[in-house]
Length: 409
Image (cartoon, rainbow, N blue to C red; front, side, top):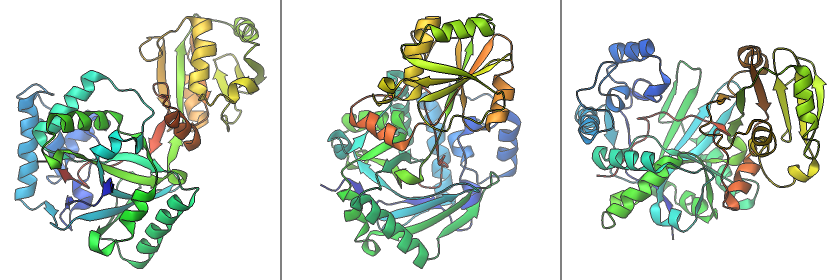
C-alpha cells in the first residue's frame, strides 16, 4: 500500500510566496500583527485570523468563526493569490538559516497508513483540542500547514530518499525561492508525479515516519476521517517529511518556583537523591549541558551540575522524564508537571548566558537547564509506544502557513 503520496497542491501565485506565507498568528505581538495586516493584503494571516486584532463578530473557535476563515480562503483563490495545478505533485522544500539547513518532501499521508502504524507518535493529546481542530478542518476544508515528520536516514532506504532529493535540487531551479525577515531562506521545487516516478516508491519503502510536530492535527484528522469514511479527500493529512539527521531539536528548560532555599538546603536535597544522581558545584558561566544525562541547576547564589547514575541513563528515558520522577516529585511533591503552577517552561531558543540571565537570577526561582532530546531518543520513545513529558522538545524547522495547502473539500 502506498501511503505517502503526491496531491493536487495549492501554492501562492508565483510572484507572491514571500508575501503569502506566514507564521502562526499567535507568534506575533499585537502591534506586529496589526502592522502585518495593515501593510500586506496578501498575508495568509488574513485567512487564519480573519478578525484581525479587533473583536471577532463570532466567538473564536465557533463554526461561524471558521466559516469566516473559509470565506477568506475562497477570496484568496478567487483573486488568484493561491493557485493549483490539477496534476498531482510532491513539493521538495528546503529551509536554510545561518546554522541549519533542512530539505524534505511535502506530500499527503493516508489515514489508513497512520492507523496501520506507519506513523509513530510520541506525545499525548487533549480530547478538547482534538475536537476543536476537527471542527476547524470540517468547516474550513483544507490543511494549510503540514505536520512535521522525520524519517530515519542512517539506513539504505532513508539514505536513498535523501540522495534523490539532493540530486533533484542540484539539477533544477526552484519554483519558489525567497527569504523572510527572520533570515530564513525558503526554496521550493514542485515535482509532478510523472517526473518523480522513483520518489514515491522510495518514500513508501521507508517502514515508518516519526511525527515531530503536529500531534493534535493528526488526532483531529483521524476524527474527521472517521466521521466521513466515504469521502476520499478527508482520508489524507498534509505532511512534510525530513531526514532525522537534519531535524533541529532544541532543549526545553524548566523554571521552578521554590521555597527560598539557600545553598546548604539545595545541597542537602541533592544528597538525599544520591541513589539516583551525583552532583557538583559549577561556575555560573559554565557552558550548557552538552549531552543527555546531565542537568544544570541555576539559582542566584550558586549553580550545580546533576548527573544521572548509569542505571537511569540506560532506560531510554529523556532527561525531563528523569528530572520529574527523581527530583521534582520527591523534593517538591510535583505530581503533574503539565499543570503544576510552580513549573514553567523556557524553549531553547536563547543561548545559555541569556537564558541564565533571564531565568536563573530571580529570587525564589531555579532554572533547570537541560540538553536537547536526540532524534534517537524521540524515535526510541515512539517505537516503545511511550510519550515524552510535556514541553520536552523545541523542534525546527517551524513551518509557514499558506505555503502548501491541501484542500479536503
